[in-house]
Length: 322
Image (cartoon, rainbow, N blue to C red; front, side):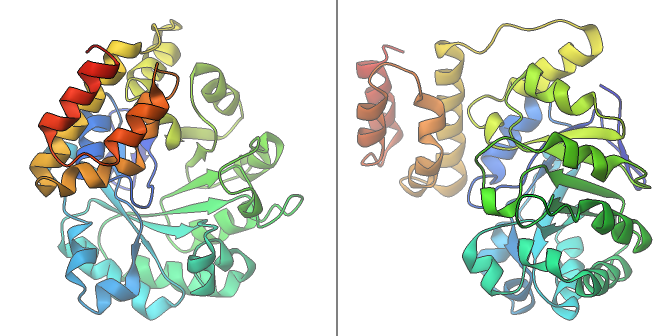
């Protein structure tokens, strides 16, 4: 894979772990980083919560030197709070600030943020300009193709972003109305890349070499951003690196490797948050680790009740034999 430069920051490759609310905490980001991700993103945080000094929100932005460079994603619906929040994020040690213009969740839309902003180009320009002027580190954006099928606003948003000093745009090639399901619109993504003055990263439905290659074949696609396809499948970063650099396919992670990642994640989460909170925090991702494994439903059910690593390891030994 080619190396990617975002502002003055050069990544080791052009493979990124996407920001995912409630999921991309420090333990998961470290797993992605040590398995080959060139850039990892924190989960999305509220600009207003940061400005109001919410300690819980600040804790979501805690980073570790071993995951650098790391990007922090913020969302909000007004230029002032976004600019002030960007200063706070920079002060907390992020290397890159990312602005969310693509979240389709109703709660975010009601706040006038996320994908809702795609309908207001003037406000987007004000927000992007305010954030860029507030910090010294690079600023990027993450957008959707549009709100509904047939509405491709991405080319114009990318043009606006470049004019405001944004250094990269990640485009989720699905419409906001699709959420996280359905096929990405490759034609619309290609239109977004055409003539772009800043690097454009592809996002949406990337789970293996085939789904990654269809994006990388599109002229102007500079990078790949992987979300749910990386959870419990951290080897996807090294596999794509080998595939695009050497033309070889690595063996897909088997049951033993997935369970190994599951155990390591549980250990890291318990150490970071303490027991039992660390195991509770992992309930959102358990199904990614055990899908297609024997007794998957039973394991999920029991995991949702466990509060100690000892109980967790006993479940895996009893139902998987590892």
